Length: 79
Ligand SMILES: [Cu+2]
Image: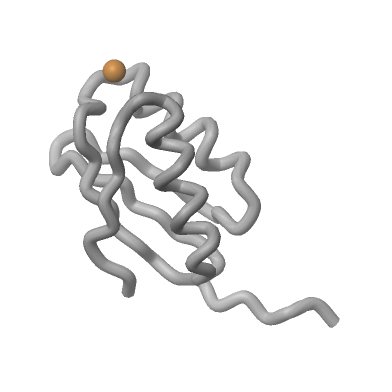
């Protein structure tokens, strides 16, 4: 049996990325990261809504991916 995965939601504040192409790039690369089940950029609230496997490693990978594209993601809450 594989390890049970408890779906977890996290919200990040997104700094600097407000246009459509930024949002699409973040969603595109985010969806390719292991452990991510859903990633949505909300440009109205300047946040990233993430559903993932609850691993701190996945959170780090999201932050690193956003920085690589040229923006900043700051973890706000984990539910
Ligand atoms: Cu942009």
